[in-house]
Length: 415
Image 1 (cartoon, helix red, strand yellow):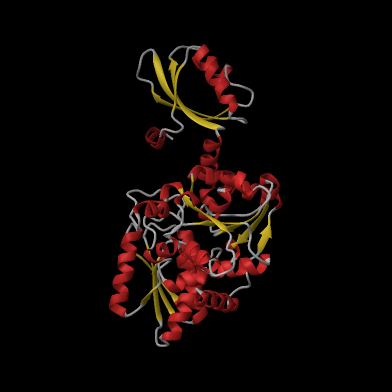
Image 2 (tube, one colour):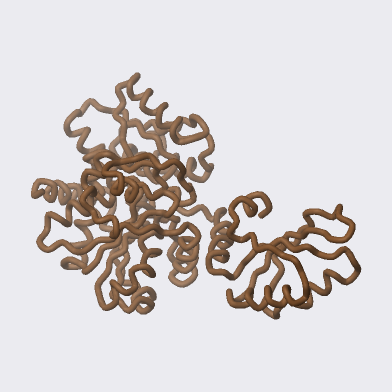
């Protein structure tokens, strides 16, 4: 354990070649809201806007120290890991070959090229990550390149532990609680292992996206398992199978300390941090902050550090984030209405809307019936309670309707 602590501190010192410690900032807005002393470890402010640079840099540094002739580094990634590897390759003056799915957004491809410059070659392979990963590993076997795992690598874990080194130095000691996001487990395992080398380590909570809870699945099964389905919305942490090495560091966690964050609620948190604080977080970067409502009773009056792990948010996704946030908050609903096919029927419906009810979507789905037409309606309002009153008025007026807001199948086809 002591050796790991020393190695983590060395990794932290070496990172100063690239950037100063990311800020540890007290957040007044969250502190007041939760009656606690809440600090944000701003990993969204590294040069590549995520903590992934730490692990990539440390792994590359150690491989080159042990094998000075190693000049080719390879990874498979469509996101933050690719950007961290690209940045580190340019720093060290080595060749990086980065495999990405063909479906990777152009914005992410362009950012990776920007960070890597002439040091990086990007290869678009396959429609899904698994194909890109297989191609990357095959390329390593052919060329002798060194494969850089995004999380399941001892040197990567050691590099991510530098986040914990900085937190204790900046805070001047242990917080009462540390809240860590979990995807593949590199950050959580590294920081947890480092803190457990120190006297009286603090309590920790681990936050996964609800649609990619690979850590809690592994804890329940007694080892890493592959999730049958993953919601890719939280793309920086939606991992189907936690790493073998990372799980080894997390295997003794009590499953009750692992929380799941609903994807739609994460959208509410992202908008809150953007609109109130001017902080841009990607979905994975908002995980730790998003868990605070679930921890409200536990953290009252205590010092809490949340790691905001990334800020690589494509603003083309903002309409989707706003839509999902409104649905989760209950201020936007979609429903199917059977509207009588007679003059004035639409006016009758409009007259029962409240003063704060706004039609955001109106679309006839079927007009072939002689007496009734089926209509898809989306309503936005200022207060979720308004919908109970609206639906009561619809029932009183004799309208037949069905709320499909939370019906994934119907909403997926119609909305």
